[in-house]
Every structure is written in structure tokens, then in C-alpha cells.
Image 1 (cartoon, rainbow, N blue to C red):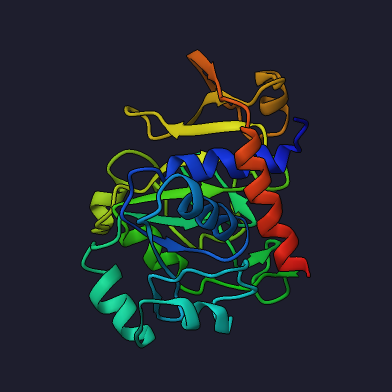
Image 2 (cartoon, rainbow, N blue to C red; image 1 turned 120 degrees about the horizontal axis):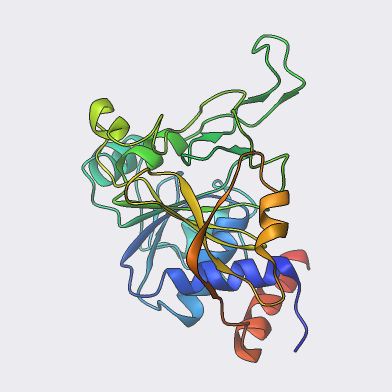
Length: 251
């Protein structure tokens, strides 16, 4: 079956959640992947949304964290302070799943402003929300972004959420609980932090992809693994369920 680069990215992201128990879900691309994972690869995965929905099982893709579908299908709905103080900050959540407008080589994220002047930016973005705490306290963090020089930048215009800061040891110095970003899933391939330098390295390429295309779409000199592997293409079942989800959200 034919498929788009975005479908490939979403399927690979959903597969990465197999075997996980709880996921703090960001709206947008991460939410699509997390809901696909719950339907196919991790049926017992507990989806947690910032609004306080725990164990949400939406029948369609939610439009926002305040979508009533989340509360109506959740195992429990708690206050926002309880989600953060009891569930997130003590490190009880396996995976935080985020996206962003900008990403740097150490997995730091910007969702605040584009432009050098904070008071008069070129673009003012939605802001931090719960992303800084998710990036700090989840045991692991997955990032899902479209791969382009506009997004994968040499220097962030603003650091909203910390990945590996300025390199090895930065998270420890800041007292951050979680491991940080362990996977970056894009429409070109998969990046993982180098165990020595913490710099994001291309480790997998999607079918038909080219590591040089990934380098060209990156604002820094992208490292490529010596043993670069290829991701498996989507199965007919994965595509059928994903497309049904998206069609349902658009109807």
C-alpha cells in the first residue's frame, strides 16, 4: 500500500510505545500516535492528558486537552495540580510524548517564540503549557516533529523545555528526574542521543529515505550512525486504523 511520510512517522511513533504502561500525551502528532498505539500495539497503555484525564480512551482524535471526549472516556478525571504534583513530578509516568516548533542538537525544545526579541517576536507560539514538566520528570521523552531546517535549528530562539541542555551532565546539574529525550521521530527517520555526547544522531531511515536528505534538512551537522538501519513500512492494518482515526476526527 502507498503511504505518506507523515503516516510513516506516525506508525513508527506508535510502535515505539509498545510495552509502555503510561504516556503523558501532547496534542497534535503525539496524540495521533499514542491513540494508534493503544488501538494496535499497546492496548493497556494509560493515556494521560494535561487537563486531568487519566486512562482516556477517545473514540476520535481529541481537538485539544480540553476536549470533552477525553473526560467522557477516561478512567478518572483529576485536577491539573494533582496530575502534575502526584503523577508527573514524582516520576510515575513512563513516557512523555511532545512536539515543538524548534529542536536543537541536544533535544531542547522551543514552543514559545520565533525571533530574537522575546517582546517583539516574529511569531508568538502557544507557549510552554505542561511541556517543561513533562520533559523534566517523565522517565523518558519521545519527540515527534516534521524534519526541516526550520524546525531542526542550530540555536533555539527560546528554550521552553530542556532536553540535554548544553550536553552531558546538564540534566543532572539541573536536578531533572527523567532520562530526557530518548527518541526523536520524524518524517525522514529516527534520531537517538549519542550515549557519550548526548547529541542527536540519525539511527534509522524510513524506506526510500536518504541520510543526505536528513542532513540537508538539519540546521546543524547531523551525525549519522555507522550502522544505519531502515524502519519497516506500515502494514495494511496500521494504515487502515490510522486513516479511520483521522477520518473520524474530520467528520
